[in-house]
Image 1 (cartoon, helix red, strand yellow):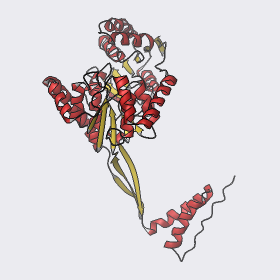
Image 2 (image 1 turned 180 degrees about the horizontal axis):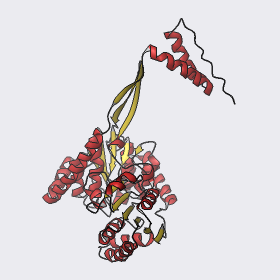
Image 3 (image 1 turned 90 degrees about the vertical axis):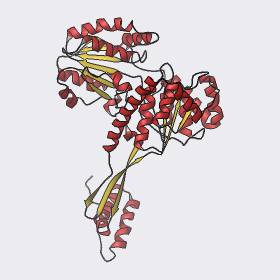
Image 4 (image 1 turned 45 degrees about the vertical axis):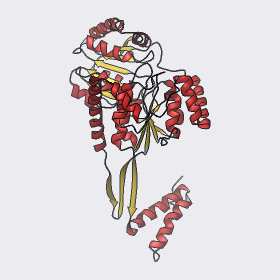
Amino acid sequence: MIYLKKAVRLAETDQDEIHDVVARMLAEIDTGGEEVARRFARDLDKWAGEIVVTPETRAAAAALVPDRLKADIQFAHDNIRRFAEAQRASVTDCEIEIIPGLVAGQRQIPVSAAGCYVPGGRYSHIASAIMTITTAKVAGVAHIAACSPPRPGVGIPPAILYTMDLCGADKILAMGGVQGVAAMAHGLFGLHKADILVGPGNQYVGEAKRILFGTVGIDMVAGPTDSMVVADATADAELVAMDLVGQAEHGYNSPVWLVTSDLGLAERVMERVPVLIDTLPEPNRQSAKAAWADCAEVMLCDSAEEMATVSDRYGPEHLHIQAADLDWWLQRLRSYGSLFLGEETTVAFGDKTAGPNHVLPTSGAARYTGGLSVHKFMKTVTWQRATRAAARPLAEATARISRLEGMEGHARSADIRLAKFFPDESFDLSAADVPS
């Protein structure tokens, strides 16, 4: 594999400085509660209006959204809901008789309360509201809170507010940033304390979720968004170039990667990307230009297998295959957040309307985890029940293994059952003599 273009900076953040700021804010909110959260909203969001959005405000926002946009949002909502419902149907309760008399099983139980963060800074992430709230609703979460940064003098933009309401948010906070995350985690403003916090956000939101993890669950620790295109000689260079540009506009530190087996394609793409970036409006243009200059890479490989190996090593958040034999790629690839097969789809479809969730693992985390799904809002818990006959071999083996491990209390909880259930019998429950 040869680098035709190499990144000159990593997709990193000023983590130490951000951590200190966020930790201090969280500590202040933990101590001062709603009053401190309101102060941060005034200082950072420039918002002194209502925090808990009323039904009247929701209705007023819906009236401001054009019918065509409502139809588009409903189209996306339907697709995402249907995919989430299919995911939910794929996990079921089950039980098995492991040995005669010992029955064990699993249950799928949704968490009680979820907090969904919907970004609303430079970009109004309508799609993030659909991805998070809808998925929680389908999972069966009883209490769904959502928050989004209000705009000075406006509040949450009408389209985002309409979407939150459509998708089933029980309570909505006009509050963003660390203070919004903390409010959902601590159950401020009349919310149920969140069992899990989900949704994308800026570096401060991401750090707040990371610090709170353990107190609450989170979907994942996310870094800057990233995207890879794998293309062979059959790919359309213009489509490849535009797909890279479309993802580079996320931010100055958002990596985009091209892995290809065709030198001519690579050269055409590298020629076209700067031209296409220059056609973007500001501030998208500056973001994409910086991402391409500093974080982008173009890699030339000898074969499809080598391209797949490189892709698996990177573990991209978004992976778009524009190459022959798509079925081979689907079966071969092992490490990605979401996979896009063929030129007829694109990452933008998945980000906005297609159905699979767009809250995905970044920074190589796709090597060990997937993205947001109904499963993130659910707990797979297990149970067991035994007859006295089944308890006999279980207790004998448990007592001996426990004593070998030095856990006498465990051993005695097995012993006492043997003594009660089988009082007329004797058992050898000593630890095995294992050579050192």
